[in-house]
Image (cartoon, rainbow, N blue to C red; front, side, top):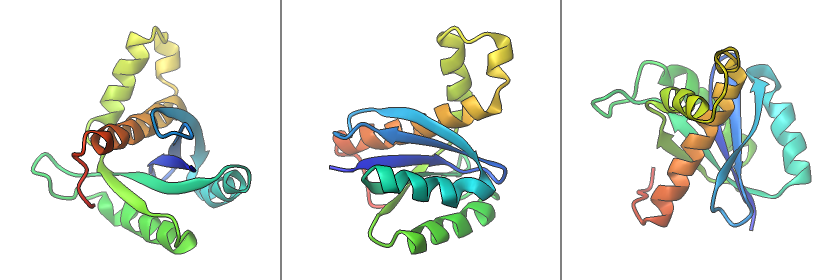
Length: 144
């Protein structure tokens, strides 16, 4: 059983998370510069079996895609073309940055550490991926 990669896409940085082999929990993996993503993910796929990607998709409170989809849609298409045998699932990414910050506070991360955007990106990717796993295990996952 391959792992699932969670992606918190940003134009400058991309936060990544990964499941355990049994798809029970998500853990932060890395934060990479957007222009380094292809090299990073190709290197990772040489070492680990990955069966799918979960990408945080930006939607507004009215459940309509936000303005930033114009940046993420080309990334998603490129991901699908680059890895045609691996499904790309989209999941709502609303509030993940705020949830990541709250997780850091609850975890005792000092104020200086909470300013590290790379850590927020990794934790956001974990939240996106864990949300997907939880919905899937609860049978609430619809085809996206």
